[in-house]
Image (cartoon, rainbow, N blue to C red; front, side, top):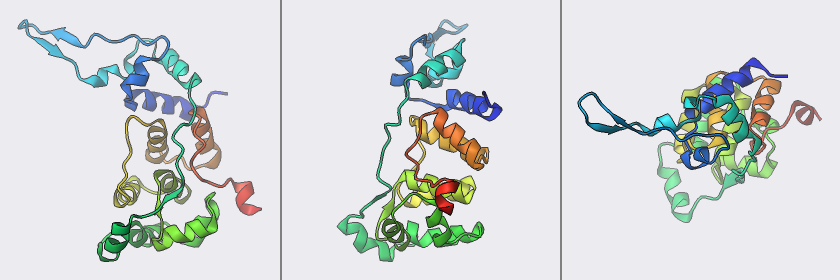
Length: 212
């Protein structure tokens, strides 16, 4: 069954994804003419955005070919260890993830304990992230944002204090941005979108796992 929100995700992805090396290698993709001659005879080069999938005449077919070869290769651990210098500086920093996180959670009537039960992370690791002993990786911030139904502004702030940002050449980041901006937090809809792009590295527990 083809869901309307998945079709909208496809269009969003095709218009935003910008790993041009991978795009150019898609079966059926035709490299656009990037040089144009203006009325004055001057040659100009089009912006690289014209290489995005959505500008292909048969873009849905090209995208389908791209998705057929997808595998989630963006595996990361849910956390990382701060360096020695970071451990020294963190107590004096105005904002770190551990300092900002509780303030953000209050906006959504959530607590670290509630969030931890919704994440597929070891309890010791989660407590370490909350206390600032560990730093959350991007996949963990994504999971937190989705289970808390966060607004884009807060998610970007949490990513920024971790030294992270969403990237246009990342399949996972584009799909996550779509879920976030379109407020697709329903578990079934969310999981359908993630599965469509073979994303299984966001550490979220499913409802049956949470209640078990």
